[in-house]
Image (tube, rainbow, N blue to C red; front, side):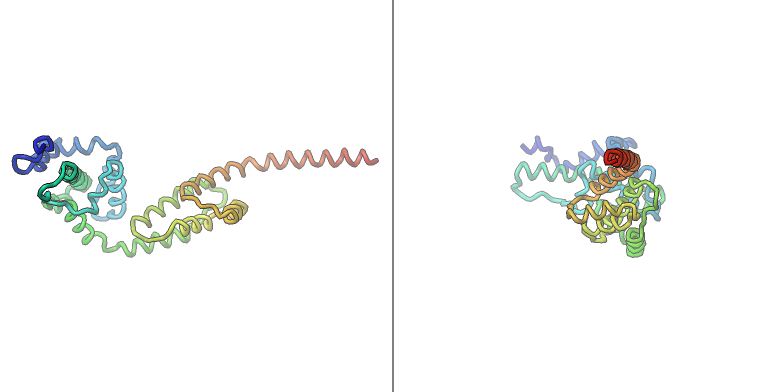
Length: 254
């Protein structure tokens, strides 16, 4: 069974690391190239001044591979005695994912920054060191992001979809900064950022006590905007019909 799990002959996961992750210069590239989302941080490599955005993009990439847990869970170096086959498999997968995540993190750094971290032997150490050095201004960053979110206003006549995307981006940024605002607060602020032309939508939304996610709210606003644009022509038609009916009724009375 141990041979099947690849846990014999010393340190198998390091042997796997040699075979899979460091096969010449192209090993890391092969691991990274399988994820189409890696183009995101590849165009925005960490350079020492974009820590928050870089961390956000890294999480997107790791979520795609279901490997984000590596960022928050310290690597276990030993496997308990008498471990089950399932535990052995989990242990092996954990180390395999760890190697890949470490390669991705290092690959998405500029060369100058990369040299500061390529000697660290685990993801936790790399991220902790980066946080200590580059996240000092996070408190101010959170203040600026919170201020921008609460003061955001949609310009009259602009696209509600574009405004919704902007607000969603701010929400995601606040989440990354652990602002700890609940969904209702996000929804309330987005609704309050709308111009007065959306007052009927706001009244209907609040009166019906609708429980919606932010994405669902944005979709509703887009649909409302489309309906609102077509409404004038419908109302004009209805008004003309009403006037015609009134004239016919008046002639009938005569």
